[in-house]
Length: 163
Image (cartoon, rainbow, N blue to C red; front, side, top):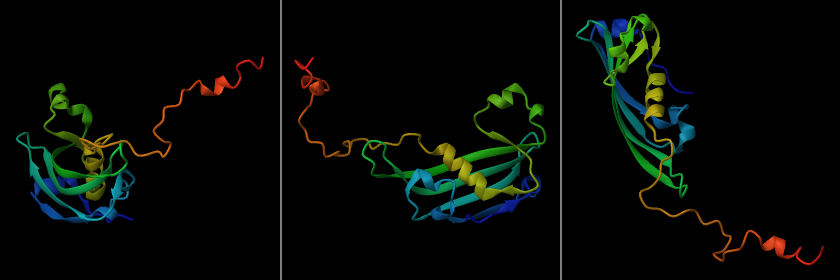
């Protein structure tokens, strides 16, 4: 079970609080099925601040290395995590302008009195991981079926002349 770090998103930002630490990769339960190894830690830092428009923001930084599975050779690949996200809290998503919604420099979240920071970190990792990771150069896994080519019609050869 992953540990919980809970903050009040608006108060955290208004008071310009900060928290940092390390999370064992093995504790990130929602991410584990995408990894080949659960050894190591991720460093995180979360800083609260107010935007120029006086909205509460959370600046989230993650650093570490995850081991994902190569979809070609099925071996592990070290995937460096170096995330920097700006999350802006809003009371009502309908208050956002079209320009704000299209701004890729930050994401919007509903303000919460109990925001689980570890769940937020897991969300950010899941969004960052490649959908089909592959080594630059690797071979397909050996299936043990030999190297001789067999025609897909070879089975039909036995039926020839039996009709």
